[in-house]
Length: 89
Image (cartoon, rainbow, N blue to C red; front, side, top):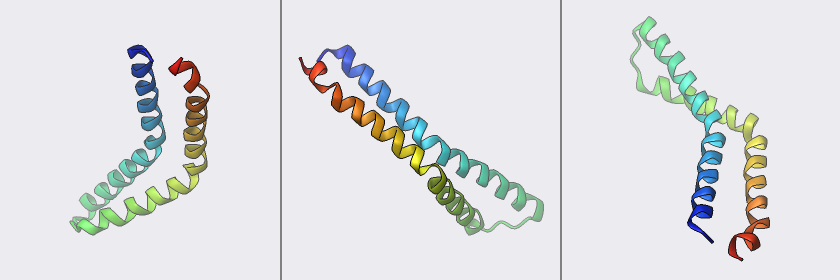
């Protein structure tokens, strides 16, 4: 296993991590922005008001994007397992 192979494998793993986590982060970010705008407009500064909608949005996004996320991860793992003999030898 050459250093180039290790670096390439690490790069692919990081790309997959970013790609899979992006929908959850975007949902939480958008929800946080909307709640912040609502709080600024109404001058309600309750900390729990921002937590619960983010949690709900993240859960809904996980339910909707979950099958795609699992497919992406299992495809990566299958490719990795199939290429283990070529990487070692």
